[in-house]
Amino acid sequence: MAFVKVLKNAAYFKRFQVQRRRRREGKTDYHARRKMVRQDKNKFNNRKYRMVVRFTNRRCICQCVYATLRGDIVVAAASSHELAQFGIPAGHKNYAAAYATGLLLARRVLKKFGLDEKFKGKEELDGEEYHVEDEENEQRPFKCILDVGIRRTCVGHRMWGALKGAVDGGLHVPHKTKNFPGFKAADEKGGESEYDAEAHKEKIFGNHVKEYME
Image 1: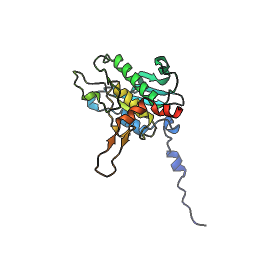
Image 2: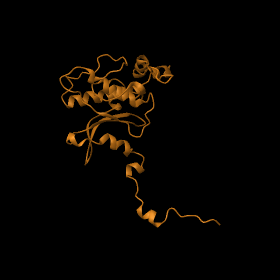
Image 3: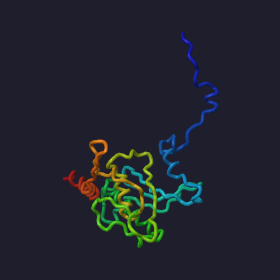
Image 4: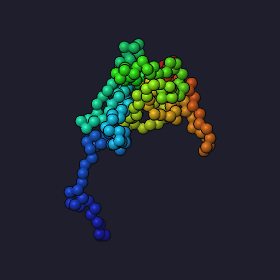
């Protein structure tokens, strides 16, 4: 019988350290969280806001959050089950509901900070690319970064609907159109990619659900 080296000996187990609880449960990606929460020292502990988007089996939840040593503090929140009050009784977890929830969150956050009159957001919903920071204003827009948790950021996912809703609502969330529905990457290297805003508009209005129901 060949000699087999024992790799996991007493010294190994003595030094073994378990992962954090939420990592063990598969709930938090600490590598991503560390990057989102970290703040430069020369910014003197300014709050770094995150737009947290989560999906359950029944609804979409959007929150504006900042991190402290005591834990995350929620500034404002919106859930898609609240859309029943605005005339949407069902379908609270599709792309259209995610967009509406993101829009609701944006208006709540801006109202809380007294910016709702200065930043009206997008007047017309057409699916076109929109950045509130490009407009001329005396004050800088409210900035937060998207936090998607452990979800895969694939093209056309519902999380981009919530992002688009928040951006159209007047929040400054850094993004590109490459993950939106209707985006087509370039066929050749160095070629130009295409973004079909009309296809995105159809998705926001829930026409894909309507066609399926018919």
